Image 1 (spheres, protein in one colour):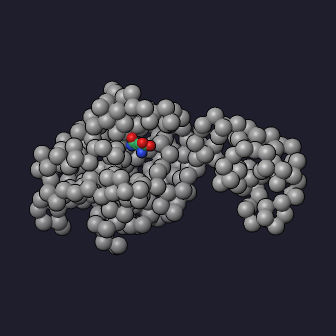
Image 2: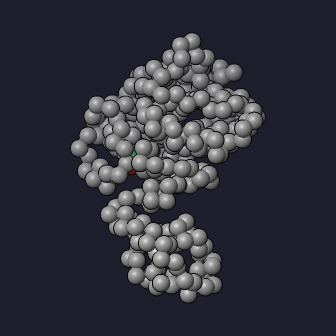
Image 3: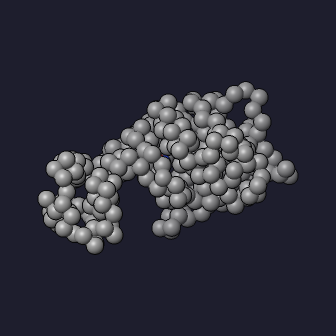
Length: 281
Ligand code: GLN
């Protein structure tokens, strides 16, 4: 079968068809345009059809390809981790705005999944000391693979520390405090209608452990944060479209100052932040 013929018949969105041809058949968009009559081997066609079947069934492209770009970096993903979303890049931007380019800030990412937030920060700020926590060991294995692939071995701030466990309880005792704590935690309520569209992604990353009103894990993170933030340190949390007010109230109740919310590119209030009072170092 020739490439153009497969493309015409596959009934996929154009970007998806092009991504499959590129990753599976090794055919770039440019070479497809130049040579639409390129012959696909039977093995390639079989693998393309299999991938197309998975996409038709609703599986995210990132799982079919095994990777997703985030903050300009190529992250390996598996069904053990949430697919990194473009709006989550806001948390990285926020962190970078509060970190000197050559500074050795201490940064914590809670619920790191593929490592997207933690490793993008580590990549952009080579001297930062980065910690990342996740409840899932399978997720941390994906994050470790990404850390290996994306960061230089001799990184000035050292390798990111990836630890398994329950939010702050995962950290060793007597930890020095953090300058920045970031999290894209589970924030979807048990039974939320959106879960049907997210059925390939880990429930643990979407809803959390015990089932939730959508705010339970955020509540636990905010409650713990003041005890782990350095004076002048920042907490920034991603949340659902209707949670900004509740999250701001939690941050204020936890004694954080300069509390505010930022919208994502779609205009949806998506990230709420606050600062622990005191001089930053
Ligand atoms: N942003 C995800 C969604 O598609 C939810 C991610 C999360 O719960 N952290 O709704």
